[in-house]
Length: 640
Image (cartoon, rainbow, N blue to C red; front, side, top):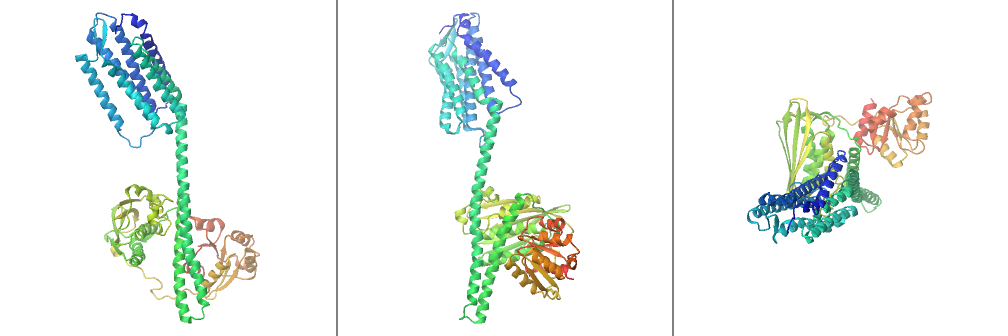
């Protein structure tokens, strides 16, 4: 094909001049309209425009040099080679832009296979242009004429169009994941450039259409997909979609959790009610002797007690998680001996392990400091949950608890590792085991009792203590959970120096006796009244009961009491109103104006005791369900 002197500048290159002008205006507009908004796709689009602009500029220079007979043929070949390289790179980066739109965030950072492949193709293309310079296998220039050979179509058209068709194929494959706007912009731009290249090829390169159509494509892409407002809208939409996905996932998990909790709560409740029914039937069985009845009922009551403890454990787990998620869980530090705590853990799980025929070992570094300050209750909860988890998920083999530590100044970090030979955890599920409401391997573990909240609670408690937890596991071989718990050292007393203090019972001190004190118990639930009355009578107190606030006030006016146990949630007049009535009318209730009034409530949330005592004015607080020992503590405190 021939380039007849300056005529080429006045004909085919008009489109290249127009493309250059439009690209410069486009780049100025993009930078002016940036507003500090930069995205991965915008960067790729700008790189594409820069290479296209460079290709157009070189194209005009090459055409101008072609019109000058004094210019070296080799120099003209170099400039046409640079022109083709610019268009090739522009096509390649536009293809990368297309992939960036299709896949906004790559799941695996780093070099993709596509990126490596395009790099290799680019290197091969540059090598092909260099080879052409020496061999002229594709094109050459001689005597003012550009000589084309069949291989030129591979360099000038096939290679750049390859990326465009790959981009179209990717759009088709991912069409369901793209918005209508994205599909229209990407497809129309690809077709515009392909159309320009086809027309230019059909006109034997006399009219340089392709550069002009590339520029139009840039304007389409930018105005449809790359304005700051559109990107902000897309970011917002993605965040909303992610939030909706997380919310749906959380709702599904919570629904499964509630379904599981229904089963977990009903199981011990069924045992409580069933054993109670069997107890009543035993009492009515005339064929059994008194001794047989007592033995049978004793067994039933043991089962009722264990089922009640299991039910209370479930409720406590749910309450603890509620405290944590509401930000109301606090760490209360006080002095304690770590050896004493670990002994309690050993005593609990040595028995449970023996019931499952598991070997239980505890190895404690005796050279560590033992008298420390921290939240003993929460530390015990952490260790107990980890060991309990190991026992529950191990059917044969052993459980080993090993405690080591590292001391830095006055802080000791205990490393407590619990190793089991249980079912283990698949590697992909390890991160999920600490999620609330998410129980992995549901089918395989459906027979295991519990809320499944234990590890979630452990993780959150450790976070509150600036501690941590590590997990190593092999599926179907076993797991090792290691908790790292920092605590303040109070003295240099070692764990090996610990000696358990004797309890009152060890010293032979008799149980508490009330010496004829009068106690009023107020509760609208008649069963709760019977429980409290039965337990209190064992101490020798004289018990009076009332099932409403109004009845309690009538009794308080008439008779002097040593302690008043007052339920909070009662119909018509609750415990708080009864207390206010007494405190605000001291002359009407002068017999009991100084009587300790202890609130009895099932409200056991974190910090609630301070609310009842400091804010409402109750003397003390007793959480339901309460144990006999807790009742004795209250009596001992106020009946001196």
